[in-house]
Image (cartoon, rainbow, N blue to C red; front, top):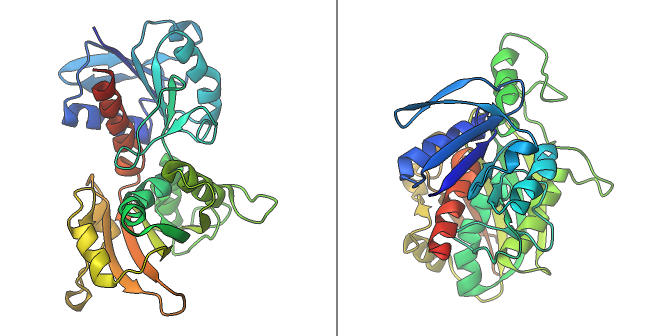
Amino acid sequence: MTKLAVVGATGLVGTKILETIERKGIPFDELVLFSSPRSAGQKISFKGKTYTVQVLTEAATDGQFDYVLMSAGGRTSEQFAPLFEQHGAIVIDNSSQWRMTNDIDLVVPEVNEPTFKRGIIANPNCSTIQSVVPLKPLHDQFGLKRVAYTTYQAVSGSGMQGKKDLEDGAKGVEPKAYPHPIYNNVLPHIDVFLENDYTKEEQKMIDETRKILNLPDLKVTATCVRVPVQDSHSVHINVTLDKTATVEEIRDLFKRDSRIVLVDQPDKNEYPLAIHSTGKDDVFVGRIRKDDSLDNTFHIWCTSDNLLKGAALNAVQVLEQVLKLKA
């Protein structure tokens, strides 16, 4: 008997988690849906059955759950994930709360796998997830010396209010999720600013890339930008390799890699687009070209659906990975 819980079931990512569980046929015998008190009591139809969303309490964590998928924010995770863990569940958490905790695995199934030092497994930042997927084969084949990210992140990364700010901005309504209008604008500001003048989002990408790839000394930098796009993040990756490579070798590497979809025929105006990534599970790469200003350095453009591979899908893939490893 497998008992599964989804925490944050009524949110953007929680909804996508349920859709992905159904689409991928994840096996379970019992399902419980949790949310904040504001959303508790809602009815959700799932796989021919109607579920009533329950409020998450400390007592509820002692429900003999086998697996818990959490997407309810850092504070909720900080309070409740260890309680689920203490009661024997494996928790896959989508918040940033546990990502850099030393004994907690940070997992992208195409890149690494959990070691189960703890019963909590962290889902990385959305932009980090899509970026390390192409970085992994590059590292395996050529080695990595330096990575510089510039992200172009969709408003759905800020949840429902981010999407509403974009919609309302067209009507002249002041934003609530952002410090400035996002409609017809670009914000070089995601999350709070740190003492080093990087934002927390940028620091996440730097730290998480090193941890996932197990390259603690890798030189990484990032600039994270919010753009007026509904869904799918785009990331420009500037990467310096250890071993000499050519554009043709990199294209061929990606073309042969099942983890990646190569879209790179600029002469035909074919390259990854956010609108083509939306609703798809894949990570798309293209615009591969040599950076003539640095030795053995290349530009790569990468797009992916931030609510799927960047969040819900990756969490469900981690669950699939765990089920196989525990079989």
